[in-house]
Image (tube, rainbow, N blue to C red):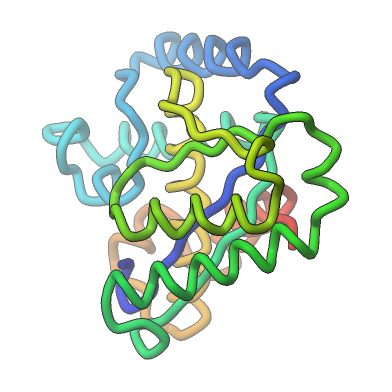
Length: 209
């Protein structure tokens, strides 16, 4: 849950197009800038927690820009499922709503999913009820032998981080639109005009549906 919102990003990637080169360039960009290769997590970056603890504001801002550039170059697309705390009251309600919406989304884009012999599904395992709902949704929308469920490789974990980035940008957009941005948002993203031009519009180029 993110400040009154539940957001789940579905990141789509054709695995025939490897992303290892993109990851290597990102790591090289960090190294050449004197920045650590910290697994990206927007909330921790904004507030200086976990791997970003002790890192000064200027470096965290540079890391945000670096990861945004990395995501922008990746051959991926995304769709975000959004719910408010008025829509869902607990994890079970979230799982039920999300499962139905994911199934409907797949069916509405069925021709695209059917282009592939196999659809590999990775989920970070945050909530068991959500994990089960996602499995049920994919199995219901696709033939059971098409959707497979796998443990993420290193490259796939970068896609988890991209999902976190997209969810965070979409959440920030909601906050700017409602006029409820914090001083932290202003420090990293600037005003609404700057955020929209430098982050939201760029992210939307990857958004589908």
